Image (cartoon, rainbow, N blue to C red; front, side):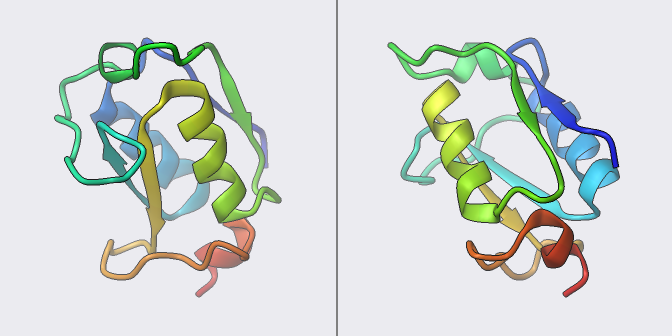
Length: 104
């Protein structure tokens, strides 16, 4: 599998769709790191980025652990994401790789 790239120009809806295509998992996106308020699908990542967050490009492979991926996004954009199973009914285990989470 090729690396999955995220950048600030992506819209939330596009990020969710591309994440599902790449890993077969659902992605929940929030406007804050504590995952309280869901982000609107038409917002760009740059527009919801927390003040002081560096932004830029994040590159993720399928061997990255779920918890590590969620932390990478939080560190880069100051927003929260949660990885869930394909039908978005159960959160993935933070210690599983993205590839392993897709098989559960």
